Image (cartoon, rainbow, N blue to C red; front, side, top):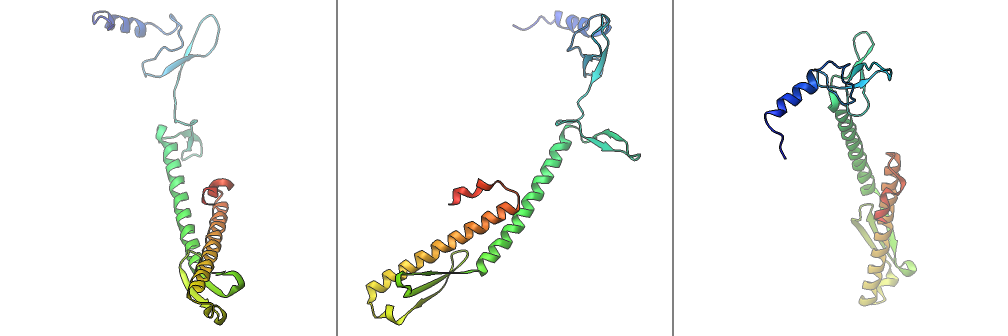
Length: 186
């Protein structure tokens, strides 16, 4: 139910136009629009304005004299600092990830079939580099040779993926990320 338009201005005027000491309430607003809190609990109540200078705890800036002054950034100052910190962290992660990818691309990982008749070499990022087949494997026939090449490739791929996971886990640890963060890749 909406208040009567005739009563609303009167109620507002009477609530905020009386002297502060005559009507002690905790949530009274002063002329500046800030909340007032009692300074003491004596019989006579006095009020002081309470202002919020920042969103997360009142960060103070240094002025020319080296004294602390309220932050000029207001409630968004700490959010700006948080944003800048996140952007810097992203840049560091991107640079390190590119470096790790280059290291992995230069790494060669070998995989073998049973009896080591065939050797498949992959890069750290699973790109095939070469396949070496022994004379003994060539004499086994086309079907057997095909199965051995497939087994050697699977072994090389598994080792390459494991090396990549270990290198990325080392990267995450060096950047200070939680230890279990990369468990989803395993």
